[in-house]
Image (cartoon, rainbow, N blue to C red; front, side, top):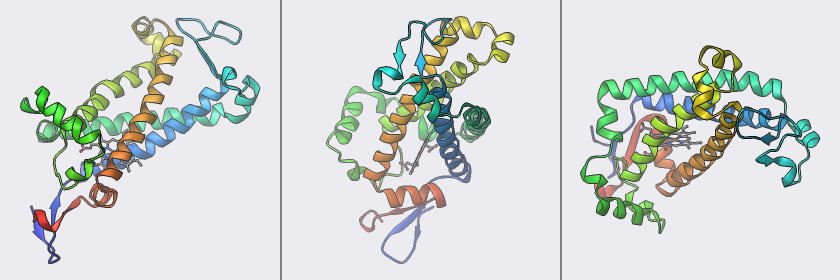
Length: 240
Ligand code: HEM
């Protein structure tokens, strides 16, 4: 509910406790997953396609082609540290994501706040939102307390496509899981293909976070990040 703080500005409740706690757990888990994933990759700095891959086998990506030899990469990476933290935070990320998703669906917030309305998906509406982003005019939306259609679509792709794909390509690399679920290997055409797709997904994650943080900064970092911590969002005086 809007509330006047006596400063000419109004404060509105924007993010629930569930969203805030899950979001920041995700940020910590995401950071550990990225760092530990890089450590694991550096220990075996080549990518292959299909079922087979080993040093000397034709690779589709070699860090050595970018000036870092196998031994130099191995010296930078720590597979044991990487694996311990990667597997720990993969479960944190997944369970936290399921709690966030389950709570959002159960309360109807998912439909109200994250699923685009039919009129928002009309080409004219998509074009308008895209134009508002391209010339970096996000500040014009800075007081908005609802998500734009492109923002909704990117969050939905993250939750419903990206996270399941990263989970499955991760599990497809685990001999324990593929012994119980061999169809995982067929799904991606081999353990090496799953590893390559998982690595491409990591690059997509870095791009998502970079764009996400830039958008937050463009839309007013202090107000947006404070709202994601305290739940309260400050509407500018002219909007009050
Ligand atoms: C330091 C890094 C990050 C910062 C500062 C940040 C900040 C924010 C802020 C301020 C919002 C609210 C946007 C608004 O009100 O318009 C938000 C929403 C969101 N962020 Fe992040 N974020 C970060 C990293 C991440 C990561 C790593 C993920 C996913 C793995 C993520 C996923 C999301 C999602 C899904 C939402 C929508 C939440 C909802 O309303 O249900 N963020 N973020």
